[in-house]
Picture 1 (cartoon, rainbow, N blue to C red):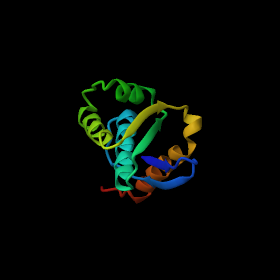
Picture 2: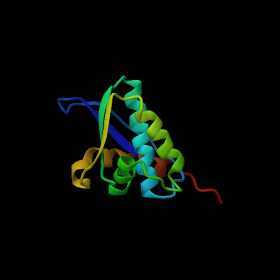
Picture 3: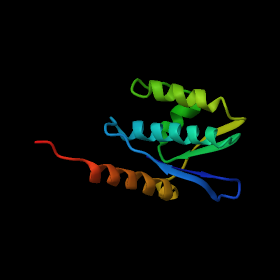
Picture 4: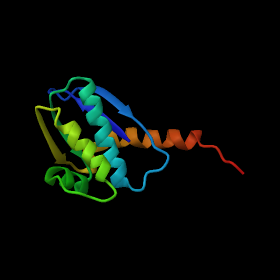
Amino acid sequence: MGWHLHDSTNSVTESSSSHRLFVPSALVAEALSVKAALTSAVFYHVSSIIVCSDSKTLVSLLKSQGQDVVLKGVLHDIAMLARTFTSISFVYILRLANVQADSLAKAALVSISASASVIV
């Protein structure tokens, strides 16, 4: 997972990544990334936020407050975090427009792969 927080001038104010050993799908990973980014924004006292994601399915679920069996807990956590912002919106963007966050996520994946050990 990788995310960037940008200020109103589009300057990166915080950038981070994380990894999980077992995530059932790319959609779950994207939802966990949104949750982590919102948690970070709360920590930095951000009051208004636009969340951009290259997952059309996730953005649709977040905008409609829809449900998904696999994502139920994460969607609930995101909804609770969203209540702390004065203004929040979820926007679908093309993957090509999300290169920075995608690069962070891939670096986290490489990091976990490099630290994995084989047990025989």
